[in-house]
Length: 331
Length: 283
Image (cartoon, rainbow over all chains, first blue to last red; front, top):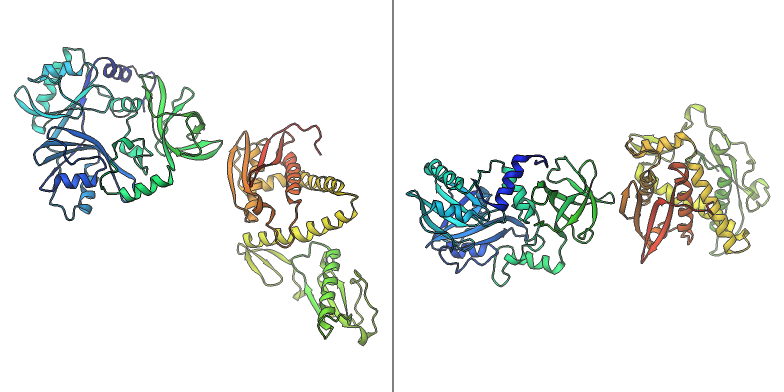
């Protein structure tokens, strides 16, 4: 929960938006190898993975047989025959692969415990990175992944992040974590880039303002309902394609929307709080947070597509807070 | 031959209704006793000697052959006479005290029926509508000069019935208790009336969808055909006008006169509204 008056959180958010900031950014990593790794990933994910060059990555969702999103992730072709899946739900992904890997010569492993991660984010993040690494990061493309070194320590770097700003992610062996952190701190200090300590700022508030959601926010939706249609390649075969085609033919049942609470509110609106229109339940909240860049109480919700167009006035939460449905992106 | 009903689910209706029922039974007898198909005779006199609705301890209907006992032919509603022969009297210890009631969470009556409350309420609501509403309306329609006059009388009758239903504080409290309305919903809240309408629609198995249910009003959508066609025994074109007037009257006493009920048409549907309205011509 974030408050309007939290000056620390506000400063951290402002740093990311206007300068740069860094933080320990842990998410899961699943390593995928094997003769059929590329073919397997191309089938189990909705975006085109086949032919992805070494050193590049792609954002994609993963669907169940009913066409609903069960994960959203970035796939990196780290090296020949070696893939890294950057996800928040590693153990789930591994279980899912177990159930669907038959017929593929593929191996996969949750390597989260071996690798530590840091993120450097913000319009000046490249400057901070260039203090850290020998080779300039200026030419890196989005989702490009390379090997590098920080003070002699081998690291992997990708250009990406979860703040909607220019940014980079640094992966290192866990035993090198402290040394890497020290190096980042020193480089960041040269550009007055603080270390972010408030998790809700960089996991919930900053991403939400830019329209970036967590996988759990998309619960039960098809990628089209979740506004992720751009990442779905219907010209190839993938798990869940048939159900997705049927769902497309029927038309969207749900819509993924933004919510703005219309008054100064200190409520902690939880996941699954009911959204009501004229007292009738029409959807559920997914997450609510304070956005410091836009200075509003904002959130994501899943609503009945037909009954709740953008602009609908609703009430949410046990105290019937007045809110309005908006596009799920604020800046 | 005689038949003692002791009492039946209609024992509260009153013996005028029983008079009509007994007349109907007489007709059945007459048709059946005719021998050849189509030949109607009047061989049997049927008398409702006692009626629980009149205060007697039970109901007794006696059939006696006219030629055996030298009885006169009965007129159209002459069925509340006495039998020729003395009737039996059920000893008090074998009489039914309550003709109908709730036991074991079910509705039970002297016929030996035990049904869920929902089943019985639906049956009573349907049949009750027929006997108590449809038949009198047929009589009123005959009496009125024209259709406009009939509609005027119908609206007045239903509006008054609706208002009277919730004049007493215990009636309002009783409904709140039955519908389990939270105390946060105050005395001037349209949702009390909305919930009552929903309960009636539910009992009558009329599918409906809530479109609004908040402190500013209630909107309930029903399909026109299911709303008007639910009493198959006695379809009535004016059922919509009747319910609109009745619910509007009820709303004024159950909630307050600031709130009204009206029914709008929307394609093949009706929208039942509970909302604020100023009506200078209110009944």
